[in-house]
Image (cartoon, rainbow, N blue to C red; front, side, top):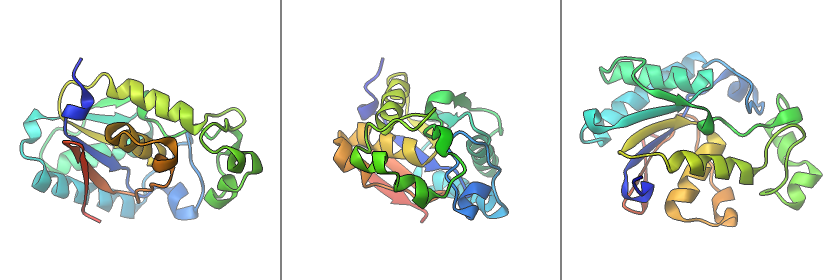
Length: 194
């Protein structure tokens, strides 16, 4: 097993989906990409082609939710690769918001129990941030080559935290916009395309 911190990871948040446009927290709910989200995915393909030295040397992974798979497929088509030449992995899914799915993003962030201990608060029938961190860590432990990873807001935060060795407090302040593209390489991060 390779040390994932020795690898280069291109981490991409999926393009805008209908839940994002409406201001809802999607969690595990599936939400299709908007036309803007599809354009963002294709644009990320062009950015990736410019910043990744050899696309043939990369593994490709996406969350198993539709919005990330669709983003990955559009990105791959844009760079001339077969749309379906990637691995879908449930460990890259967005945090499970349980009973807090389909509420406004602001509303679920103001929940009193969440505010008391945001890292460990388990949403009813859902997950805590700590649980998302753990499952993303299990995914990272399986990587053997430089990789492109298309995922969601919380897993992006957790991938970054693992790679850069951040504490929960340092991790939680980070937010990547839809269709952001981050390169994690040699202990550093760089953002592209936004």
